[in-house]
Amino acid sequence: MSNFEVRIGINPLSWMNDDLPSLGGETPLATALTEGREIGYEGFELGNKFPREPKALEALFKEYGLSLVSGWYSGQLAHRSVEEEIAAVDKHLELLAYNGAKAMVYGEVAGTIQGSPRPLYQRPRFFTNEQWDAYAKKLDEFARYTLTRGVRVAYHHHMGAYVETPADVDNLMARTSDAVGLLFDAGHITFAGGNAIEVLERHIGRVCHVHCKDVRPTVMKLARNRNWSFLDAVIAGAFTVPGDGAIDFAGIIGRLKQHGYQGWLVVEAEQDPVIAQSYEYAQKGYQTLRRLVDTPVEVLLNQAKEAA
Image (cartoon, rainbow, N blue to C red):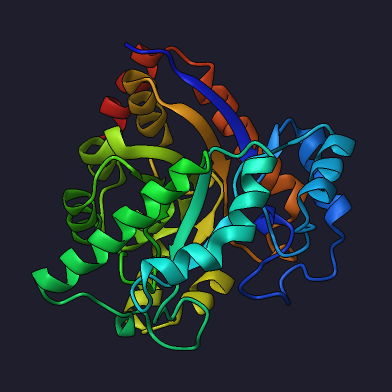
């Protein structure tokens, strides 16, 4: 077994939502940073309330004794050229690199319906091998460029986007080189109909970032059966923190340990903070991951076997 070195971070979504600002929009960023540090988190991903000037961001994290984990980038390679994407990413890439982030969360937003009131089945898709090949070629070139700046693309498979299902992830990984890292999101892959453990095992060599998001199966089923939008599903509570849902995180952490994953484990659970109180749920997520990280790999894999 290789060295397993992780840090536990969190996304500010537990306090405030970027896609739906009405969820926690009144909460000051200082509250999230203070509470996150108090709970035990070592770092935060970016949200819409963080400064976007490299030195200002550095000063903020230094003030709270936290690290920058990463930051979402809204990519549009499905619709534009590599040259256009490189020009568009420049300032964001500089912000991440200056503040020590090694991975950039790449979310493909061209044609996405994740923020619109449309049912999930209306998401965009690549229908032919030629479309997949063309997209993968552009993504690979873009990812090789970000590596020259010291930051690896962590591709986020996401509900409502081109790459959503396990088959989509398989297609993308098969067509791209190691320059393209995979952001493994347990919640999104489960919502997309996948088995989180199986998808992780297939692509663990490419995983460079992990979002630890749990799910509530009853809400997911309602979302599918009633043709809800992604945001409707979020508001209804489809996602939650590790330890509060149905995903086998003992199995996930066990396999990451076994493989020698090195990087961040990020609690990211879009919920309404009025219903899922921010501090309580952020603490539950942290404590669940902390316990699993501190548990020997053999014990975790046995637990996972018993749960199966």
